[in-house]
Length: 464
Image 1 (cartoon, rainbow, N blue to C red):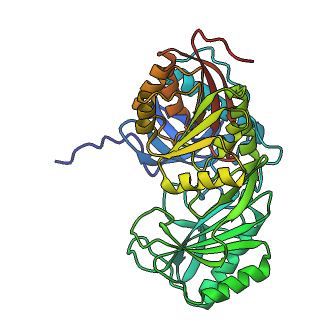
Image 2 (tube, one colour):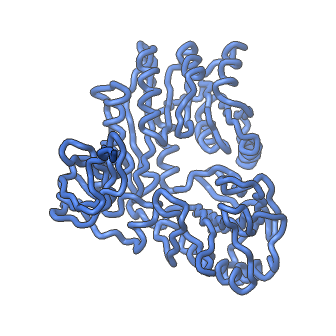
Image 3 (cartoon, rainbow, N blue to C red):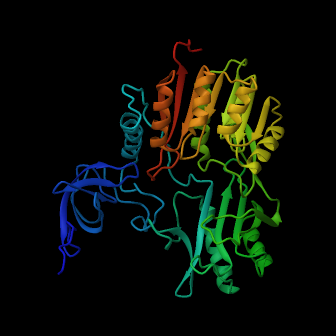
């Protein structure tokens, strides 16, 4: 006997609904007969027609077919592949509306997850010109119908969306991409297939120093060499005299990780340089370096402001990467101890400190949740702690040590409002008070938001 389907929606029917909210990724949210439906590219206040393309027991996903009643915040996306590319989720929204949305995302997470009411959340700091702001682009390379595709992954898939131009990347990256494509076609370079693990060229990464104008091109390959590499080097350097580094990155693992551990320098040096504020940094292919240098300077300046240093404080900079925030803090601190789990990043941090003649920093390799309890047990304490964790937030062992240590201030830099709210809830319940929150738009046209938070120890007097 045929059982009745549990599905609420027909695939052959279109549905109309009103959008009442946005997810933290920028998806519109509405309901059909009380059932939650998520819709890409839809805005609150809009009435839309959708086709249901996915259904679970608790929600459905609708494909936007028509906007019946548009929001006044809607604009035409500037990118021709916006609807399919997974890079930018909110190009259909005015930039001012994006900044409001990102502030509200932080605010709602603090309330819903953190249980924090009456927190001062400032307006999101945006960009005067939110275009061509990225200093790094990573293009996956594929092949379809014997044509080389170099672009970005389709939304929620690994299909490559090819386009001749991306307006959030440096102008040079669009030209370099076409030169690499032409080289592959002329020289029959095999293209990596992630399903079979066969083929050579996997990714093309381009980095640019915004203040030095230096360019780096990294070719990630499933092998140890690139045939006719000298021809590509010649083409690239003839077109751009400011290319300082061309690197072959060896990644022979069957993985989604873009870069392998081995780099072979094909031209120039194995790094480029750039500045954040007055500090110079050498950036290698594997270095973590914030991708929006304009907003990074604003973010780090705010971290220094919130730290309220007088020159007498010992500071912990946790998840310090290549030491970027550490160097900013060093100019007003007695000593800065940076902790990072990636050995290459710590090696870069030490080099960057030496490059800038900074002598009051110390960098330690290890997990913050292991290193900091050990330092605290041995008697090393911080007056101010800066944390800039990955999206998963801080480990509870680290938070417990901060509670035991009771620094005067904690400055929390977050790229994930939900784990931020979770961690602030813990700290707020254990002797710290959230004083203010400053969202910063590091990634215009996407749903991502960075936030920096000042916390003080309850009962301590803030230093002005």
